[in-house]
Length: 445
Image (cartoon, rainbow, N blue to C red; front, side, top):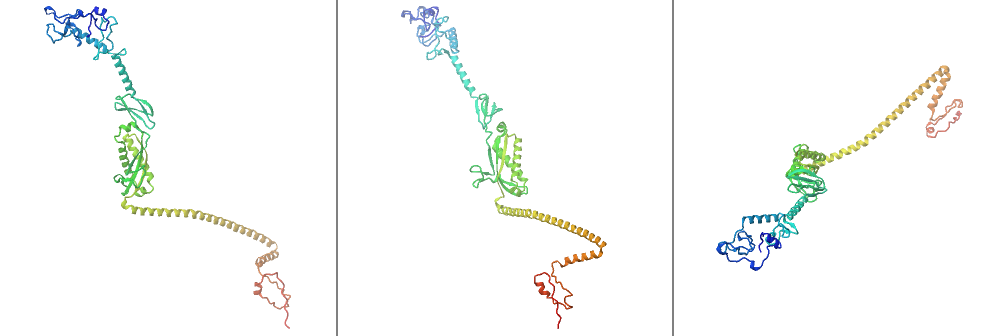
């Protein structure tokens, strides 16, 4: 049955859920009244102002002229009132039921299925508000994020970096206002130039050589083949993300350029032998300087030479030169060893001879001084007693002369003038014995 706004009688006699029900005799007649006037419903209202509900089956089904098939149009006042009622229900503030006084027995409008626009006593507007609040809370919760220990968070506000967050649980305004990028700042990145490794990054025979990158010209206009690796980390994540477009390609190109410049200042022999450490340090410093000028936010930790060799066409000649240099180095080391051995010994012998000469000099001087003093004493004694001094000198001289010689004592008085026989040769061969007097010579008869 259609709902309608009833008068005061309907509000007092009805239950508030719809119009009051009367007996069947109160139903309006299907025939039009005499004189062509429109029929009236039992409630005393003309069909011209009745409700325009689709469920109405009263005598308003015919036009005031009595033509079948036409439906009376609702009045402007009723249409405005019904629209306002529906709007209040949708906003959660209208639709009073029949038990609450003051509504004149109006019932709450129904939806398409006939159910009231309420949910457990909540208005539809309130339900919508709660839903919007829940969606907003979920949207705000999307700003919670975590920065790992090996990362740093770069927060962007409308695409512009505004801050850098350290590891931990962080928050940013939800998208599309803010978003976060999480680059790994502790990971050591490796770039290979001149070769491409097949395994764990170490240079091996199976690696693929890239001649366009490895062939370089030295300072003395010789060609050398160099393979090296560059190790780098992210120093400033904001600069790293926004100042350079392709970080790895940029580092590779700059590293190759820096190495070519350093090799161009170095001759080929030092580059092949003892200048590797200097080349690594100089190229790393130059590479870091260029990247800092680019504001790339990258730190070069190491430049490592993997292979420094001449081109394959001249490898044998360079190997011969290298072997000759090794032989020269070996001979020089041997000479250094011999020198280190002979020079200290020669210095020791020279010092010993010098000390012996000093001792001999002191000895000779002391002897000469002693002889001079003794001669002075003899001279003084001779001045006092010439004969005694002369005899003493004679005796001392003879002691020095006859010491260690064979001695034969002859008594010139015992022979009676005969010359004794002395076998001197036999006497010299025999051991020396104490001197014995010679036998007296016998005279011939």
